[in-house]
Image (cartoon, rainbow, N blue to C red; front, top):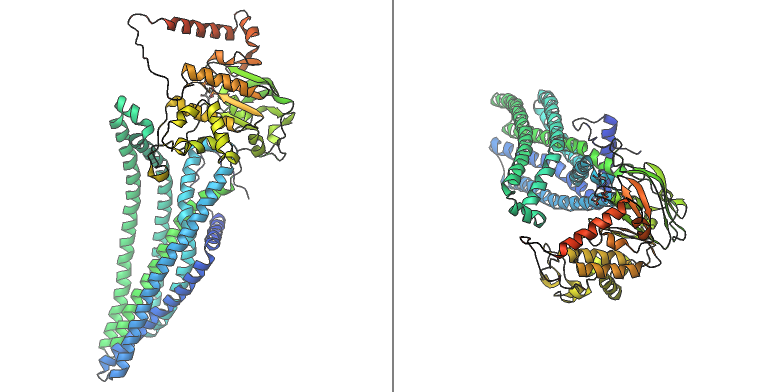
Length: 633
Ligand SMILES: Nc1ncnc2c1ncn2[C@@H]1O[C@H](COP(=O)(O)OP(=O)(O)OP(=O)(O)O)[C@@H](O)[C@H]1O
């Protein structure tokens, strides 16, 4: 069955239809058992042993007390009984310790299995939509929390039932022979205890769901306060107090919700403890009174006290375990929802063949949400194989969106994108993406070595030092890398230590951009090279170098170049102007420059004038002069 989760649907976490609950319980049980079958089998054997040993120890104690009370104990039987009781009791304790260790082992095995399953599932999502939905982020967090503990708890609950059934059966016989009505009293007390546990479990699950978005905010503000990425602005603009206040507010809201659940739980548990005390007190009172009247032995009283306490603790333990399982199942539905959710995009089945004719965007319409504004409005564009296309447009015109659609990170709402005449929705996304290489505007710098940062652009060349170096040269980074302490093995990070516990290095913004360019050109067999603002952070010398080498590299290849620096696009075979999601002009640089009142021509002239004006600083201008970053070509 496929569960499709609409954006924002996190459901009513306080209840779950019985059928769904059973389905999730069964799934959880299977996940647990498959993760550690041997471990759970050993735990089951220990549970049976422990369950049987407890009543035996109590019986031996009763026999011992009766012998002592009778006044003719006999040294050997007393010693044997005492030894037997001590050994059985000791065995229960040892079994408890071994079970705890085994429990930790199986828990670890379950965690490994479910966390690996979750991340593989998320990794299989083809598109970006899930990553942009706050509801999905919350669901993922809850899924991860629940999957970590629930499968193990479900199996452990089964084992607990096994253990306590054996123990309760052993004690029940004893209690019934001494004073049968205690059975009815204990059963009657079970009803409010069960209801109380269920109510608490529901509150816990509802609280976890309420807290999740609040917690996300709290983590976000904490990261602003503690991590490098925001440290500059937080200090410059004096934002520390603001974000600290907001973090504390989120933290307090979360804690308040948790405390309110815990208050209710404490109240319920106190009332149940009181009820248990009354039931136990009545039973013990009756048996003690009968013993005083000669109707029962001292050993019977001792055994009765031990049996009532053991029964109550068994029932309490079971209910507690059941409550945890119920709360876990309510959260575990987020795990099954994530694992079974329909993909945001449907993968195609045909492998993408090498591009021979070209890519065609045919009347492409796109918006990010069904009720949002159109971002692309009927874009028609042909990118012939082997040609370079430049895309120009003001901020927000839809250039990056176009790039994302070409990489099939989203699908057009109307129209189609054709790869050599085949709709890219029919192509397997993996094979399509192997034919594309890109430098995104918001490229990622990985906390990895320089070699890995470049190598991830084509994993098959990750360890090919020659190719990585050539890519670095094309990106204009090779010289800078030669000055790094461990050259290509230098860690590009201040968060992790590199090889030999070396501190990593932080590269400049332009150098990081060159690193991203090197990554994208490493995949030298890509049919389509996309460069979205590749030179925004480069100095003039580096930009010139990068454009020259990239232009040489692009020659004869299909490429799409998005840039606000119009000079960089001059050589493109075709330049298109995107304006509010529509292509309004298209042609070569010369053709567009000759258009009367053309957008491209006016933008180009504006930029040229700005550069000319900027050549001569006026009195009072602040001029910052600095050397080109190391490695500038
Ligand atoms: N993930 C998103 N969800 C919703 N709206 C988005 C998303 N990404 C972009 N947009 C919107 O789509 C429009 C086009 O954005 P896009 O990034 O494609 O513009 P652009 O032409 O690349 O701009 P720039 O020159 O500033 O990079 C903008 O109005 C933007 O707010």
